[in-house]
Every structure is written in C-alpha cells, then in structure tokens.
Amino acid sequence: MNKDSSTSCFSLEQFPDEIFMEIFQYISIHDLYRGLYKLNQRINHILHSITNLSLTLSKAEDINDEAVVFFASRIYHLVVRHQNPVEFNRFPSLRSLTSKFPQDRQLCGVKPKHLPNLTHLTLGFTLIWNCDIVDRLCRRIISNKFRKLRYCSLWPPTFDLNWPIITTPLLTHVKLRDGDFDDLCILLNSCPNLKHLQMLVSAYAKAPSKPVQYLSVKRLNVSFIRGDPDWTKKLDQLLSLLPNIKQLFIDTCVIYIDFNELSRVLSQRLIHLCYLQCEIHALGIPTKWNNVQSYHPLFKNINLGGFDDNNCKCGGFKIYLNGKKKTDG
Image 1 (tube, rainbow, N blue to C red):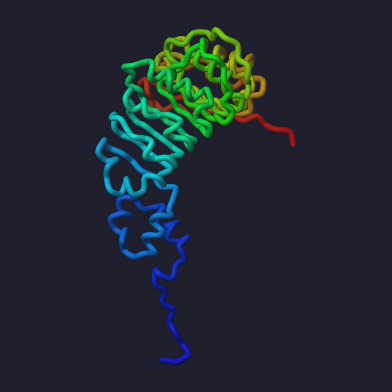
Image 2: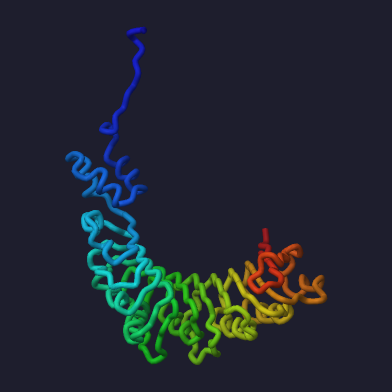
C-alpha cells in the first residue's frame, strides 16, 4: 500500500455536541435515558443540556418513570392519553399540551402558574362533571392568563356572556368544536389578532346575541353536524360575524344541497373572499347541475367529476369544489 495514501476514520466522539443534540431530538426520552445516561461524562452533559423534547403519557403512572423525571424540565411537547390528574407543574418548560380525553380533575391542573410558557393547548372531548372547572379554564384562556398562548382547541367551549372582556392579544388560531355563536362572539371580542378560526357548529347554535368588536379573522374552516337541515342558515349567521374572511373551507353532510342559496350567502356576506373550498356529502344533487357554475364566481372551478358514492359520509354523493379569485397582473 502506498504510504502517502490514508483512510480517514471518524469516531462518534469526534462529532461536536450540536450534532448529538440534533440527533437526540429524534430519539424517545426513554431510549435516551436507558441507552445513554451514565455512558460517559460528555454524553451526560449533553443529556442534561438537550431541550425541545416530546413526551406521551399513556397511563397515569408513566409520569413517575425515571426517564420522565430526568427530562421533565426540558420537555416542550406533551400528549396525555389518559383521564387521570397530571402534575403539570413538573413540566415548567412546556410549550405544547394535548389532552385527548380530559376530565375535571385533570383540567384542574391546567393553570398559568404551572404552565407559564404554554403556546399551544389542545383539549379533546371534555367529560364535564363539574362545569365550574371548565368555565374557569375557558375564562383563563380568553383573559390573557396564559400570556404566551397562540393556539387553542376546545371541545366544547364554555364561555359566559356576562364575563368582562379582557384582551388576549397573542391568540391567533382557535378551534371550537360544538360551539355556538355566542361563544364565538365572546372569543372574537377578546382576541383582536385572531386570524384563523376552525369551528364545528353546534346543532343547537342560534343567532348571535351580541355585536362583535374585532373583525380580524381572515381564514375560516367550518363544518356542521351531519344532517343539520339548517346548515345554510347557520352559515349565514356565522359569516355575519366574520365579514373579512378571505379563505373559506366548508365541510358538510346534508340531504340536499342548494347551491343557489349557498351562493347568495357567500355573495352577501363575504365581499373579500378570494379562495373557496367545499366538500359536501349529499343524498341529492341539483337537477340543473350545469347551471351551478354560474351561481357564484368561485363556483367556476367546480369539479364536475367530484361525485364519489363510495366515499360519502351519508351514503350518497361527495361533491368537491374549489375556486380561487384571479388577481390583476
């Protein structure tokens, strides 16, 4: 072999700490702790320095796992898949909290003093036994108690029209499942910078009883309870609170779709609408189907081949349409 030729060999020890910290982001905290902790002084230092970690608690006892205890102060993203109470104060750096099936006792722990850095909160279907607990949490959310909160998902929301309005400036994206329009009015009046709203409209939603102060929402994803016969009426009431919508996404399952009525609502309420996407599951379709495209400017891009009776929530047709407003130049 030529003496001048050499083969470069690298060991893991030659990599900088930053490489290890990047790689460790993709390894579960349990594997990190059991596989690498106490391996050597350098690795221990890296494990003590790593942040932005994720954790899923599937059982109540998981919180006492040695790995969880070791990394708790550096966990940024937490998913809870059980209904029991959780000591959230163990995770002071938490940015994102998702609770799949929260009950009252678990919700008691969702407090600003325990979660001072929380930016994203997602609550699955809440089994409400004590309404006061849920009310207090919802009130904290729209009273700027969670100072860094930017995204929130509630199912169902429980707001009170008699609450004083306290501005919550950082909340920009909210998802309400099974919400009514009074809930929405309270939210809109509390969040001057809300840009994106997702809403599953309650079957019992009625016309809003309060005016709206802030009109900042630009994007709306709305869906309705399956088979709701008054969905276009509710859409009209909803859009009356959101006149500056530019992007609209609708998902509904109905017996019959009246595109003429839908067009009237959109034309009357949303003069700034630039993009429309609709997924409609219906048992019946208009007999004069070819005329649908003339009802509204954004219906012109309707997909006439968008019928799929094998992929419909109600056993009928799935109608898909989208349209984008052309811009000058």
